Image 1 (cartoon, rainbow, N blue to C red):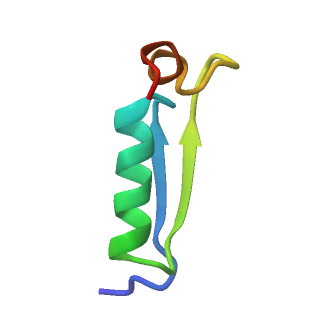
Image 2: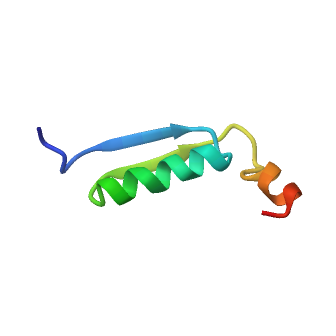
Length: 51
């Protein structure tokens, strides 16, 4: 399996999306990881909760 050109798209810019993207990069540092969010407010619920 060729993992050098791995590309990952995470749908959703909430806490779970960001943690998924971080996990992808930790497990495969050579992967290209992008987070796709439809609104301009990423991590909005985390900010409201004080996280």
